[in-house]
Structures are given as structure tokens and as C-alpha cells.
Image 1 (tube, rainbow, N blue to C red):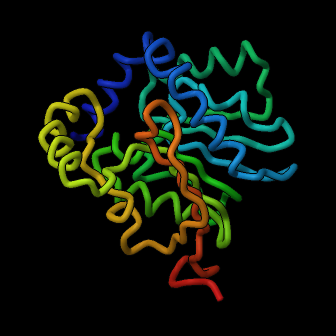
Image 2 (image 1 turned 180 degrees about the vertical axis):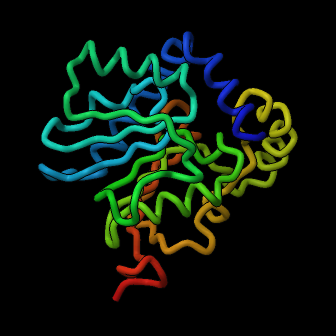
Length: 214
């Protein structure tokens, strides 16, 4: 999928997204925000903020920036921010594979149901690492293939169909993290049937963005 198709698919989802993916995935969103262990004054980036379902979970003592490629999703998100008076939240339309933020702009980054729904997950991961401070936390909440050969075969078979719906099913966590400076410090399964993984990583890049920190 290219970026234009992703934007079109999720803009079409905007009117029904909360009804389909709201309650059923809310447990995972709440767990993800809690796992960030946020402190007052910290700055958080939510990549693929969508309609903003996770935004009420963040403490108001933090600054939250949400980005999304879909204008339709952002329109719903702006409504939620206004209705709930989330003054600590700002929203921007932005391609997560080429973000406009400076390096080391955020204490923490969260991507919920994002890396399997973008044209180039590698670019998105590298951008998340770039804008996250050394030692910062990066949370991934996503479905990843689990290594079971039977399930993997089914997921690969379904992947071309799922791509038309806006996501893929055949991506593993090891593949997503390969070659990055992220160290997994927590992993658990969440949501119905425990098909989704909540993964907390520490960004171990050095202060100049290259290599590992001491």
C-alpha cells in the first residue's frame, strides 16, 4: 500500500472506527499508556493517533502530541479533544515515515495498531527512534505473527486480503526491531484472544542519534 491508499482507507473508516475498534481494543490502549510510566512535564508523541481513543488515558500533567496521515480520522480526533477539553493535547496531520519534528523531541513515543498499517514500517520505526530521546520509552501495541507455523501460514495467506482493508498480518516483532537500537524490557499479550502484543522498549541510541548509548 502507498500513503495515499492508507489515507483513503482510514478516512473511510473514520465514521465507524470507534464503533468497530473502540471498546474491543480499549483494554490494550489503557495498558499501553500505564506502561509508559509518565511523569509530570514529559512530552509524549502518539503516532497514528486516529480518532484519539487513547487520549483520555494520558495524564493532563504531560504534553501529548498526536499525528496521523488521515484527515478524516483527525477530524474525529479534534472533536474528541474539544468535547473532553484536553488542553494538553495538540494534533497534526503528518506522515509518520517523514516526521517534521527535530531529533530527541519526545520523552516517550507510542504507536498503537500502526506498524502493520503503514506502507513502510521500517521508515516509521526509524523516525520514532529519531524523535525519541536517548533512554526514552517506545511502546508498540500491535498484532505480530507469533512463530506458530500453522498460524503463520494462515496469516501469510490472509495478508494480501488484509492489505486491502488497511493492514497486514504477517509481520513479526523480531522483523520490526531488527537493526534498531531498541531493547525490549516488557512484553505481554492483550485484548480479546490475546492476539495483540504490548511491547515496551528503551531507546538505546547515543546522544547523536547513532550507535548505542553507554
